Image (cartoon, rainbow, N blue to C red):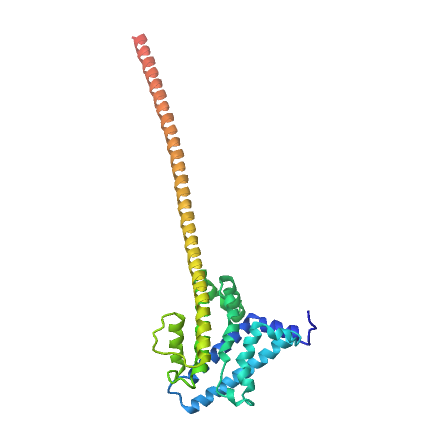
Length: 312
């Protein structure tokens, strides 16, 4: 436990609200776009300055968010040892140290906020997806989208979650590798070369056309490959399990449909058999009636004949 600080509970509820988490994820996405654009080939100095100013503004917002989270937990020092809080601190640390430490003037770690964005993937489930749509759009405006979500299967959302996890690993690896190699390694003149190298390294292809030169770069790629060997098969198994579950549900639905059709056919046959038996009973009754009528007709004919004979 800890002593709550003023407005701590309210700020915590606001930060953990789905709308706030989605907004934070969008801000992280914007930060990633700015990071990639600033390190792309052919960007003018004026554009780079604008992108750097945008990065500083985004980092300022992330700093406020970091301090607000610490405030909500009573400014406890042990809360700062939370892995997510450590990642958040590392993401803004170059921004905080830049005015006093010249060595970090070119260092940028905003992309580490991708680790916190992993929380957003818990909404990638059918019920949670509908809830977040209602919060973002309102119940009335979300209704048409909810109807469309009926066609989205759980395994498709699992594929999106897996893509997000793998993308996070790939992006962080490429960005860390770029930050470690860009100054001394001419092979990494832009961020896309780092993406290329990280992709072939994590896929264990290893063409050998690009290689790290710094100890930091070697450390980054070593840790990333180990994580990839553990994480990617695990995520692939989750996708396979989700697809298998979807196939099982489809098989069950088809089996239930076939059973229902069989039951309807059986019921129809039973009704047809009962109707045939009823018609056969009616036929027998009609035949009996005809026989009775024939006998009556014969008896009436015999009476008429006897009457005619007596009159003569």
